[in-house]
Length: 58
Image (tube, rainbow, N blue to C red; front, top):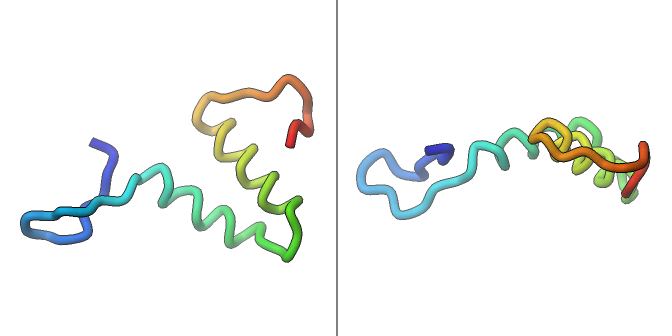
């Protein structure tokens, strides 16, 4: 279903697998500025089928 359970038996909380893919990309690109965040979000959205009208929308 696209979610990873936080407990092996009767999970009451689950994490989105899409979000788990976003986090490593953010840590690879992370520097103390907003440019890294914008680049990460643009790559994440592009990988999920969302295109921006311009090359640097964020």
